[in-house]
Image: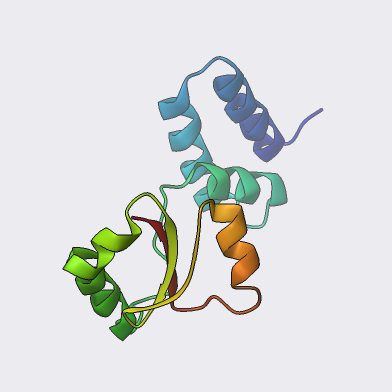
Length: 117
């Protein structure tokens, strides 16, 4: 015989199988609130919970504006149709394909924009 929490988990799984997402979402949230220590209900509630932003605010990337400014400048037109690697508004490498560009700038690409002009 199943416990009430296990029966509720089974109901949620049936609702998911049948495509009744509102029922599954509601039952998972209520089930986890009623049985917070039930591992299966906790996992189902986390799975069906609305998405949430994590990580908080990031500091602005000063290079992003410089890269956008370079892309809008006349200098970018000389690279039309090519891939470029930009960092702080400076072209670090160019290539015909993205794979070639990635090979040309191995290692740390933090703060770098890879874009086809």
